[in-house]
Length: 223
Length: 223
Image 1 (cartoon, rainbow over the protein chains, first blue to last red):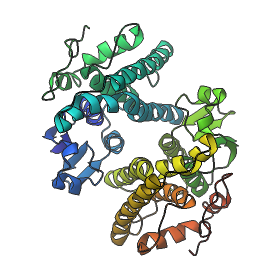
Image 2 (image 1 turned 180 degrees about the vertical axis):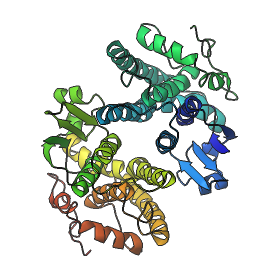
Image 3 (image 1 turned 90 degrees about the vertical axis):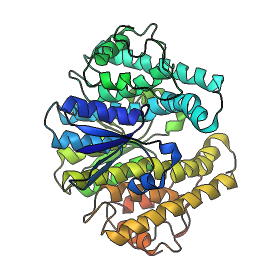
């Protein structure tokens, strides 16, 4: 059985969990707070980041969310999430990188720092200026997502792909942390409402991070 | 014919160019300074980053260095660079992400900012404290590379892979910018000396970025 090292608001772990859910791969959750820099965890992953997946029976350790997703995409045929032509797969990977790097760096990382890490690690209040800037950037990202969804059925093309999963993972963490204003983003809102109803997504939406509470609409498919 | 948008010290473009060189894929270079945020380039890639590859005849645009590498790995059989078992391929991708994220963030990004961008864009001198910290972190990364090369023929395992290419790309930019002290890193030095002699690497080492000159040892295979 796979063990997945993660914490509830890790967007990269959510991306992996959504993929595993769609592909029907079972796993046990292991709670890991990467900011605690636990020695045993650093021995497992010198980068000190979640997610990490371990199958002790197989003797396999997987590190880095994209390497993990590519591994299961290669080994589990069910529900291909990087499919189509080579150019189509490149477009899916471009968007995954966009959400993992740009959306994460512009929106999720500052929200996690201000609303979670500062509270848990430093017992400090968030900086309102940083929060406002992250929300402004979230809005710009959602404009781009609206544009994509005006031209395509799913973010990466005609079928649901890892691009949608990466986007939903990051967006859901930003939404939990109160960073998303849904007003005026009907295409993204419709797309996300559909996502929220998926069996792969429901367990994630029901989990809570201690100390930090989500807004009331967070886990409602109708919001 | 492919066109590759890049600038000489972009480590992600170097990674793609090394892979294209090993696979024997031809391309024309297009000089792009992403910090200038040229409108036509932002239309091509809203993320505003290099490398971008365009094949106008095929109507294909590729964005994000890893998406580009995966595209050519999938479409060109020659010299597989993400090969072996699924777990082996995951290890290659873990290390690629390590160099693209950690080595880049710890070492290359601050060196590029201090020694190149500040000079070209802001006409300012580099901050000595930031440079020293980047060099210290480079040393820690090279300790880890020494460790890997003590246990394996190549960084990612028994054969040369995209992990070596990503590492050489980032290391070469850091070396150009004077951020690498080779003393006491014999395994990495031997590995890098071999890399420097490869036909895929020679053209990159002969290019210069205006205003910023590399140290004397930079392009010498024997250093």
